[in-house]
Length: 157
Ligand SMILES: [Zn+2]
Ligand SMILES: [Zn+2]
Image (cartoon, rainbow, N blue to C red; front, side, top):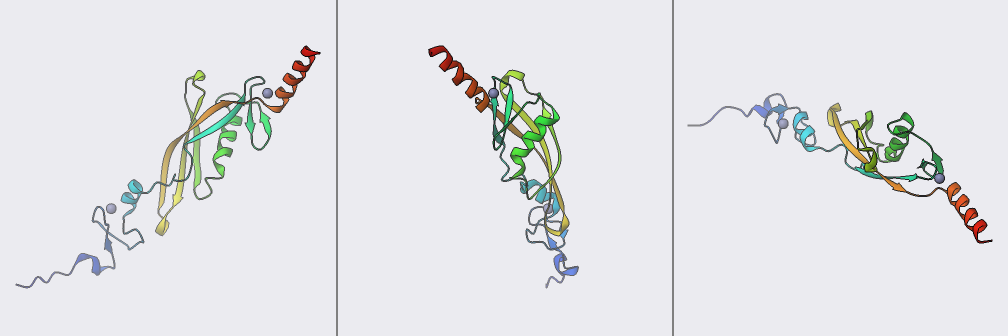
């Protein structure tokens, strides 16, 4: 006996999602949005661990290229500084939200929870939440360096 049923895919020009098999409009990934969400990492290319330089003499953070700013933990200023470090890697995604996660004050770690969105094929918007860890590295700023050098020369002469 001949099997006459036409495949469901050809009827409305839909294809079947290659992962879960539901009919969807064709797209380059052959995948439905919910499957895309589980396989596509839109935070790809954004560093998940970033160094932050901190001068403990004057308690300022380095804001590249060469300025030092004073900001309290979990302050807006620190948030801005952290985001600035990521900005170069976030050109292809939209920043939706960012906020600090609590970390032990002596851990020398700052954790930032970041929410991003990216439009993928057919206008589907994928949203992703991830955590970036900022590692605080001690580095003496130029000002403090100068003061220390001066003190050194004062004490030897
Ligand atoms: Zn699917
Ligand atoms: Zn300093």
